[in-house]
Length: 208
Image 1 (tube, rainbow, N blue to C red):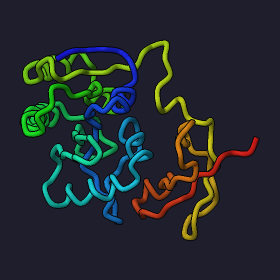
Image 2 (image 1 turned 90 degrees about the vertical axis):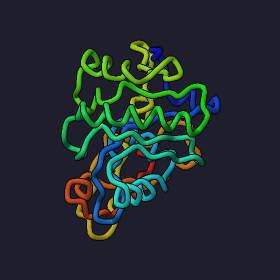
Image 3 (image 1 turned 60 degrees about the vertical axis):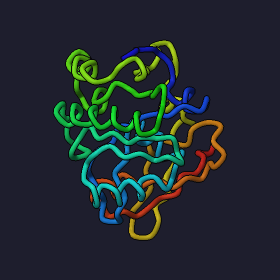
């Protein structure tokens, strides 16, 4: 296993496969919860992914899944979106990740520090587990300290106008990334996420 610093999406743009960390929670509308970190970043880029992942979770359970058309492998680090990451789940996922790399015939795969950050695990505890299974074809990308992450490189705060069934707007702490083609993306509002009602809100650019 190799470690580098940078932005994992830069490697995706170069044509490489990446791993996105996920959880096992499926909302009432059948979509997987993808509300933070790299899962949110993937959801903004691939709006159909929550629905596809949710269906796979219902059928096969909380295991890694390959999305060939997206060059993405989902990797569960949690059972529930609000819980801390589970080190045993990560270890089992690593075994399947090795199988997936062989199946796809890849010579490299980029991933983040699995279960850290939003998963609340310490890298010093996770790293030895990964090193048992992942060779130098697996490249862990850590955000550059002096750089800007994809989430923090968003266009400030966005006013969310909720659809019928939702009360009042709020300022989302995630917005549309600068330079994306579609500045009117659909995101679940916070209230709907907490209640798992599955309705949507339209994010529009905040007026200056």
